Amino acid sequence: MANARTERQKDLKRERILRAAWRLIRHYGYQKTTIDDIAREAGVGKGTVYNYFRSKQEIMLSLADLTNSRILEEVERISSGKAGPAERLRRCIMHRLLTLFDLVQKYPHSQDVIASLLPAIVERLESYVARHGRLLGKILEQGCSLGIFDCDDPLATGRHLAELFEFMTPPYYRFRSRQQLETFANRTLELILAGLKKRRC
Image 1: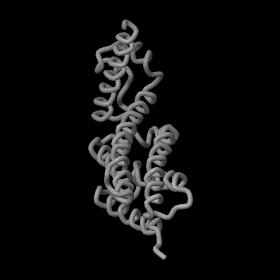
Image 2: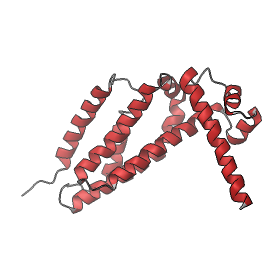
Image 3: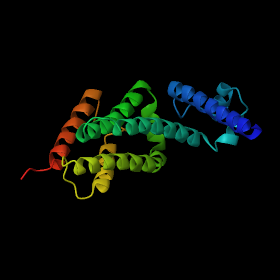
Image 4: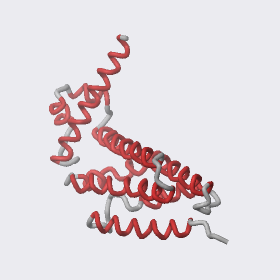
């Protein structure tokens, strides 16, 4: 019982540090925020921050992990819903795209953070893209079993779709508005779904 309580206290302190870091970074930006600032905002010593995180970069990457985990939890919920396979595939892809866009637009320093940490973020995203791809692959498998889709390798196709649509996530070089992104993504999905649709003999 004591060990469980100690672990919970550690988790709460880690969460407090992450919340403090997020408040500061979204207000002042990644470059201007220091470990000293984060410790002060969290109400802990600088050494305590380093007990949980080796660097400011690790803090930011942990925040990115938290964001991606929450998005994919919702994608998992959508993927197991009652809508047809084509609609669930669309909703899973669009949820990730639009949620990330909304987050970046809501916080003015988001693009700077991504630009500063891009190589590390891309490496970190690998597991999330793979997880997203597996969910899309399972939907494709269901669609194939129902005779809706025609796909030789649903799991590989799901992974490819996840990677393809990841190119539409931040940093944004092309999409200046949510509507522009949503329109482009929907048109791309229409082409893909038309190609996957099983032809009737």
